[in-house]
Length: 398
Ligand code: PLP
Image (cartoon, rainbow, N blue to C red; front, side, top):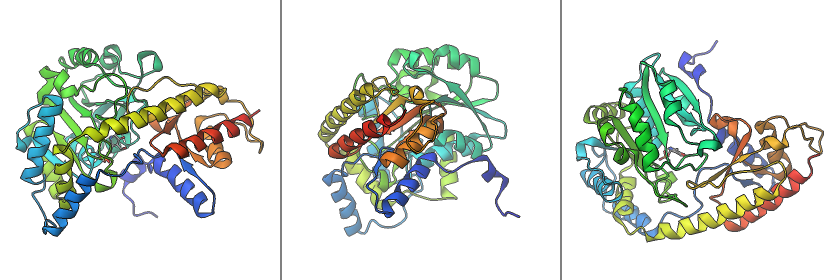
């Protein structure tokens, strides 16, 4: 007998967390593991941001705030949207929460009825489909391919919209492919969506992680749909603040109000200290990000160069985020020294954990089998070691 709700049978644990657990276990056994599975920058949170958090504690800013965040934080978020994205949102159309993840979840929970469909282009961030299912909806996965730079086309979008489509999720730069939509591509998608009443979720969390091209916020490239777009962003990726748990969203008043109500009955406000730190991040000088990008780009180029040299692996150049999405189908049918035959991306990932003590995430976790996601947001020296181990281990396959 189980006391779990039927809702829980619709979801699984995050696959990225499962890889991290295995690696932690190996590490506890004394193995030297390298995790290329985690979606987290290795850089420290900038000192001026940390100082603002410490100052908030010292000033006694350690109590409840308004559920949606302090007026000062919402003003800083509004300034950010205007400055970076040419978007104007009044404070009542802005909400802060415990990470972008919580806001995405709240938005879906606030809007989805049983049987509602949510279009999720694949490869996708692992949590979207499970969040849709938890909210009682049906994720409708729309495959993309390297042929279109892993981007949703207007034709594929049109082919999957139905009267039950509640949301279309766009994530640019994309996790896991690094795809970045241009203004023209977003406008073409808007041309399809204008004839439908679906909401659009723009997950812009990797906004600052661009190596080629320019970031365009869907809400600014789709002006005719502005009233139906929820923009999701936060400080986790751009400011290396994953553990501070601070995300924000801006969108139509009715939706932000509903998200506020949900949050008021679940987690209440995001940490007061993190809110103060986020103001310093959003208002502060962003010169450091250019340095981060340069280092990330060098790592990316090192990794894609190595992948090019490994028989059975290949990848395109990802223009954004900090992941490489490598095709590993060329390794299928090979045999590991322990006799295991590699037939799936999961087999390849498991072999790499076993043989090289390296964590990567199989593409099937992102809805696209036959690939591996390798995060290159790790220390340069470790990345060099990881590449050497990848070459050695994959070289043992026959
Ligand atoms: N959206 C995408 C595409 C992500 O990759 C992540 C984190 O990995 C999130 C949202 C969640 O970010 P946060 O740390 O702000 O909850």
